[in-house]
Image (tube, rainbow, N blue to C red; front, side, top):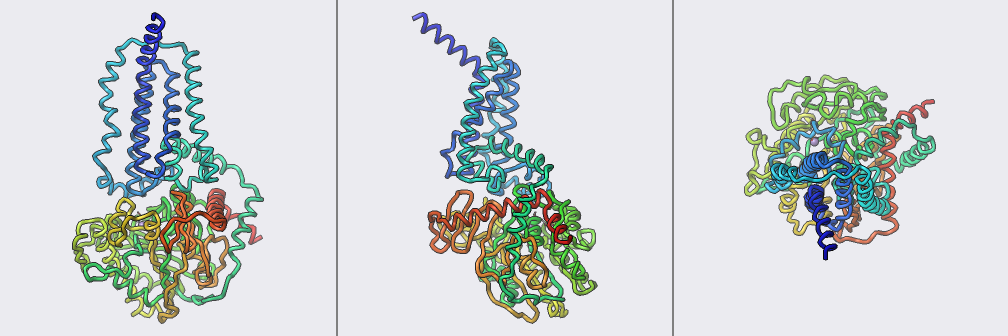
Length: 626
Ligand code: GP9
Ligand code: MN
C-alpha cells in the first residue's frame, strides 16, 4: 500500500514538475492540427508528423533548468503561434504556404497587405488566447517549488524524447519521399508537402533547403548533368512544322500583358452587357488561344513576364525576378536586338517594382519606360490609369524607329478592383455589386474599354498593317478564397479541384495584319509557350526553351509550377495527387503514360531549377559561340 502511495506521489511530482511541457505540447498540437484542418480536409489523418514535430520542439526544453525552460516554451509558443497565424492568413489569400522565398518578396505582395483585413477571422484570436492567459498562470507556476534534476539526467531524458519525435518525423518524411520523389527538395507543391509533414517540419525543411541550396549552388554542377539538360532542350528545338514560319519577319511586335485578365469574363454578359466587348471583338479578328493557362508561382506578374519572355518556368519559391537578375538569358529582347530591332518594356508603375529595373537589363531590353517616364496625370487602381498609359504609350510608339519590339504591362485592373467606378461606362452589377467578383467585372470592363481604344487607334494609324500584336492575361483575378463567387457565376455546383483548375486560364491572342489567320486554337497551352511561338513567327532561334511553338504543335502538355499538369484530356492535380478526366470531370486512376507525363513535368522543373541556380544558359550560349 505504501508503495502505491509512494508511486502516486512520484507520478504527481513528475506531472507537476513537467506541467509546463505537457501544457505546451497539448496547446501547440491543437493549434497545429487546427491549421492543418484548414488547409487540407483530405489529409487530416496525418497527425503523426504534427505530434512528432511538437515532441521534438518540446524535447529541447528538457535541456534547460526549470526557470529557463518556461522561458523557452513561452517564446516558442509565441513564435509558433505567429507562424501558424500568418500561414492561415496566407492560405486564405493564396491557397499556399509561406516560405522563405515568399517572405523575401513580402514587399512585392502589395495585394496581400491590402487584403489582410478581409482575410482576418474572429477565430484567429484562438491562436493567441493562451499566450495572454498564460501570463498570470506562469507567475503562479513559478512559485511552486520544483527541484532541478542534474544535467546528466536531463540530457538522457532529452535524448529519449527527442529520438521518439525525430523517429516519427523521419518516418513520415521518408514515406512522402517514396510517394512523391523530389518533392521534399524542390518544394514545388508547398501546400501538399505541408499538409503531409505538418507546419513545423515544413518550415524547418524550408530553412534547411534554403541553406543547402545556397551552399550547393556554390559548388559547380557536374558537366554530365549540364549536357543532359542541354540535350533535353535541344530535342525540343527540333522544328515540328513550318506553319506561319517567318510571318512576322521585319514587322513590329507589340505585346500587351494585361493585369489580372482571367478567361472567364471573355464572352460573358452581366445584366445584358458584355464585360469585355472590345476584347471579344478583337479576339474574333485574331488567332485566339482559348485553352491557355497561366503558369505563375509566387512571383505573380513578374513570373508571367519571366515565362513569356524567356520560356523558362518561374522559381519554386519566391520570384525569379528577385532571385536571378544576375543570370544570362536567351530572352526575346536579346534576339530582337540582334535582328536590329528597337526593344522596349513599358509599365506605368515604380521603376524597381518586381526588380524590373534590374531584370529588364538581364533580359536585354534596350529601353525601359516606367512611372518616371510617364506623366502621372490620372490614377486608377494601382497607379497610372490604363487610359493615360495607353495614350502616352501610343505617342511613344510613334517616335520609335521601326521595326520595334514593345512589351507593355497594364496596371489598373489590379486587385482589389474597387477604383474604376466613374472612370468608364460602369456595368450594372446587380447582385454582384460590392463584391470582389463584381468589382473585378467592372474593373476589367474599364481596362477592356481602354485596351479597345488603344487597339482601334493602332489600327487607324496604320500601325497594325506592319505589326504582329499579342495580348494575354498575366494571372488569376479571383483568389482562391473567393472561389465560391466564381463557381456561382459559372453555375458550378459541388465544385471539385478540377473545376478550379479549369478556370485558371487566361486569354491569349495573336493578331496578324489585315486580320489574317483569325480563328480559335484550343491546343492546351501555357505562358511558357509564347516565346517559341513568337520565335517561329519572327525566325528567331528556339534554343533553350521549355515551351512549344503553338503554331506547329499537335499535342502539348502544360506543366504548372506545383507539378500539376494537363495534356488537354486529363488534368493532374498535384496538391491532392489526383488525376481527373477533363470531359467527364471524374477522378481516374493513373496509367503508365500519365506517370511518364508526370515524370516529364518533374524533370522539366528540376532542369529549370538547375538552369536558374547555376546560370546554365550562360554556359550553353558560350559553348555555342565557341
Ligand atoms: C505592377 C504590377 C503588379 O507593375 O505588375 O504586380 P502584381 O501585384 O499583380 O504581381
Ligand atoms: Mn499582376
